[in-house]
Image 1: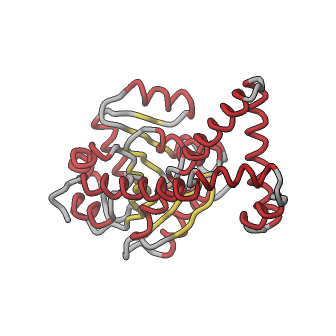
Image 2 (image 1 turned 90 degrees about the vertical axis):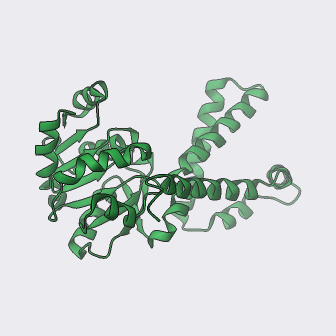
Length: 284
């Protein structure tokens, strides 16, 4: 049990998929208990009921309950949709105090804008986790405002390490983290879809194609992890001269596979930055 987190009261503002991913990871891995967690949204009671039933947390959109739970929280996690930020922040502002730690998982929203919109100098941690946090295998990029103490940095880091790995980066690089690991699982799922469909097109049963695809990707990841070798070196080892793997890789090169992946990462990063600019556009 990680006592530094286990003693903290955590309030999630916004109850979407990312809030659930972090919340679920923390609870299911025993990092905190349901009694220490509160979740709220603006009006979707049905969604809050789902969280109550799945995880046993307290979840409410009742204004009086929200005010009490948020004002008494040690950590306030900002998980609302970008389009709801300004209205939600107006509602949230009087509930906050300087002893709390603010943690944002809102794509593209800068620390500076958070401080201006909330009219606060509270310590702010800006994060970009991905949905693999749900199973404890997340990847989170993290940046800190200047007034986040070492203890608070450790607290935020341990909180997200509970659901995967964390890398601290200067804030200017969080958009590229979004493009790489934030959106990254979707690229892998898309690749898996393509492999499965290719197997089916070649005559394999759908279930067999799916099982082979899953095991292939799982094995490849574990090879990199366990051997410590670079992916490029492992690729060279399995690519025999004039062999079938070489033929496949040459085909991917003809379709500019590396360029397509890089373009996808930068497109995601660009869109994340645009989404941040669309929040309170009057603030530069």
